[in-house]
Length: 371
View (tube, helix red, strand yellow):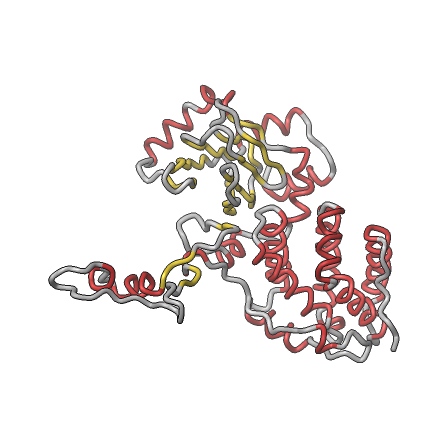
């Protein structure tokens, strides 16, 4: 059974013994060496605190998955991985960095031994949480391996963390020059050490390049700019420029929208929330694109619907109360759909239905003032 067939089966809510056996034989396996007891491990929409016998996860369906972990009191570290059928992924716990790292000593011969030995360690492998798989598919339906490669940081695992990895300016310069001794070491050959500091003598630091997410650069659209009125500006040209920057494929935009939401909701990375907001501000202030990109907006409703379905009530109400961006921006979006001539009737119907759902869920109005 290929990946698309598997998705259809799970969306239909089926999990037969035959399917369970096929996943046991053909599903992916993630083996974690030396993973510490009491740490958190999660995949997609479920996480656990692991015990002493935990060695990893089995029966992982083919496709893109979100793996994350943390030690007590520390932020989550995460990465996306596209599991292939029967793929065995091996990661080793590094005590010094408190991180999962590739086991470079493990060549194909060792991986072959590991595959042959899977039945012996089977009882130490957790079963993928299939009760949550339909939800995961709904949250990640547009995320492809290509999108993961495009957006993930450039470090070895595409490692994503809620805690920014800061490096000094001199360390960045050392890396570019390829001569660290010339900057950080004081000896006979290097009489002085170069330091970059601010006015208070503190070291100048920035986020390391290998830790940076590669999100699409979105033109800033402010609420003040639109004045939240029906006569607000049309951001369609800006949206089309962003669309062009990802090859003109609207599914790339939807995939990035899902990627940003997942690393925020599950990975607890606030940068994902910021990018998610930027996309919302942009698409909700479009008018002419509602006609020229009708397919995108029709599919956007489905993506956004599942996102609203998955967030905890109290969590998202707090976000709404603190920023008020979502209720205001979506009110503008619904007004644009109502007021734009020749909008596809199915899009108008989806807008009306989605607005009613949001009003019921969050107990607030999403109707824009007509002034």
